[in-house]
Length: 272
Image (cartoon, rainbow, N blue to C red; front, side):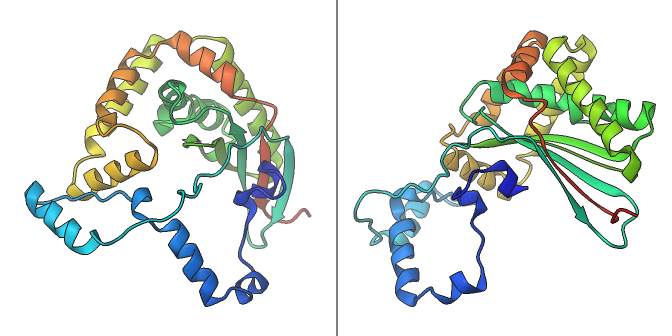
C-alpha cells in the first residue's frame, strides 16, 4: 500500500532491515539525538493540581540547562503528490472473506478550512455506522459487506482518504462500484438537511467527550502544538462544524476527492 501511494525515496517508504540496523553506530545514534531532540522542538504540557509557579520551577529544574545549537531540523514529511491508481491482492490462507482497503493521497491539509467541511461530509458518508450512506447502501440495501468504514487522515503536510470493507471475494468489485457511486454523489448533489443535522450533532457531541479526562486534555494540547493549531481549537472547530453548509460539502468533495485514483489492496483467501 505505502509503496503504491508514495514515490520512490519518500520517507513513508523507509523500513528498517537487519542490514540497515547493523551498520548503525553509537555515534550515529548520539548525533541523531543531538540534532532532533531539542528544546525548540519540544512542547511540555502540565496537568494537575499545581500552580503555574510550581510548574515553572519544576520545568526549569529539570530542563533549564537544555539548549539547542544550529538551525532546527525539518522533521515534518514533505507534501505528497497525487498517487496513481493501482490494485494488489495479498493471499491469506485460512480466511474465507476478503478485507479490502481503498486509499488515496489528497491535497487538503490540516490548516485548510476544508478540513472541517470534509469531517462533516465524511460523517454523512461513512460515520455513524448504521446511519451512514455507505452502511445503508452496501450493508442494509445491497447486503454486500460485513462492515464498511470511511475516514480522512488529514495532517500538517500530507493527507489520505480511506475506505475499508469486508465481503465475500466475488463481491469486491460490486461493493467498490457502489462506494464510487456514493463518492460521486457527494461531489455532485447536496446532502439532505437531516443528514447535515445528524452529522453536526455527532461531531459536536464528540468534542466534550474528547476532553473528558486530564490525560485527554493534555494529549489534545500536545496534538494541537504538533499541528500548529491554537489551544482553543475545539471551540473553533465547533463553530466551523455548526456553520458548514451542504454546498460547501459538495464543493470540498469535488475539489479534493479523486474517485478513480484509489490504491486497492485486497487481503483474503487465495484464488481457487
